[in-house]
Length: 575
Image (tube, rainbow, N blue to C red; front, side, top):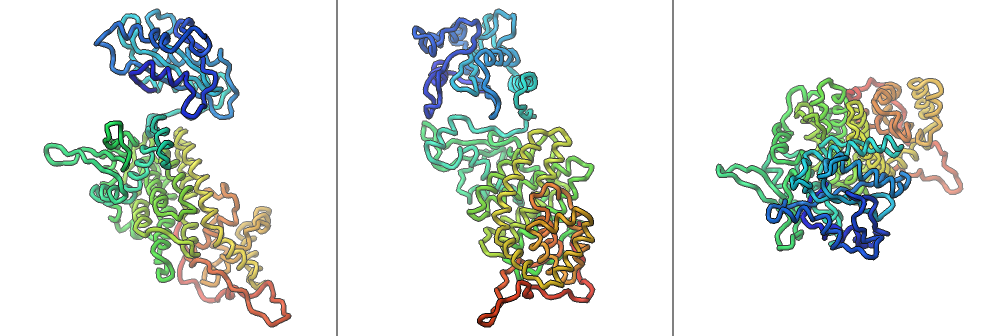
């Protein structure tokens, strides 16, 4: 619902061509009395006449008229729904104004309203909020009542059902903000750009000062509201160059960006420093990962993947506040990745972070307990900086994305079990973006592993096939052996075996992890899990063996040494 003060201005838009000539055949489908003039279909009617009819009671109040007397509510059918007739849209309009409290059936003093249709899939309902007795209607929580009525209409008419809102969604950019961004050629409206910037500044931040410093380093204008005591009471942010009609920056307070971006909510999230861990937290950390072989960005992503693994276990905890804290912390990791991704993956990761923003917030108040490790992972990813196209960095990125994908899918299930329909849908959308980013990151390392698997010595390959048959008996195992990615899995198992691990035990542990059934390729997922459990370095491309002229090399040329007979020195990571 939107409120405004210009009746004629809104009518000009509704009956006009639209911002890009998208309006066709504007006309009334319903009105408060059924006799309002229709400038779209009646050649003798004009916008001024219609505005006068709607404003008659407003004008009777003179100087006492409300400053924002125009009520505006667009109602749109979901993509894929059938086109409703004018009569059906008229019924929708009457039910909506009744639910909102604009016009109750049988009340002669109800507000004046109209419903304009200028496209196949939606109408605009416009009303002036002064009743016949010159009082204003009670419109508190009108949006919730209208949403509930629309859900009833969807169910009764067999239309696509939209997930019901719960009052925790972020404020969407207005149409004016969207058109302004298009006119200026920016990537997104200022509200969205600032929401991204604030979330990336929060990700893993140690305290309030670091949060504000990150914002300023990102090139965002920051205005802190200082109280008489000298304390910071709030903040607002603006995009450089985005100015209003008076030439002043267009400021957005935290609440205008999202409910959880107010300063008190940010302070609550930062209450526990992300680097402060208990002895129990330290005991759950993965063993050192041969840092000499890995760049700083790669090391940060491997550690973040380990934190995601541990967080996945904690989602099953009975304490919902702990789980909500982990889900919010997962959002910080996604924000950190979006801020440090390679250009090829940045679009998908930014889309994933924006989608998960909705999933990270519900009416379950998040607790900091349990989220410290995942928040520390976000901080490490930001500190590690940008990755490169080199194999070690790509492998680390793929490992983290695979772990985050499991965590996001589990978050969707957690929300669905609690009836959080919008959050569950947002997490599912996030998973699709993460799958696309994973495919980009994993393409080169998986190609190298497939090549290495095809060139394994026959005895080595047969041992890995036997390990899989023992770990996955029956038809399920035969299906995995037939998958195209089994070559890569065989290479990972052979490398783990050479490092002293039991391939069958690794496979059994990898299969015990959650959400395996959602994978596009089970063997591809198992490949990354095996490498992650065995702490294997990034796969380097195996050079083709040189051969004498006229000699054809064997396709089973040795790429991995046979398994040693020594006892493994390191157990796989806990799960």
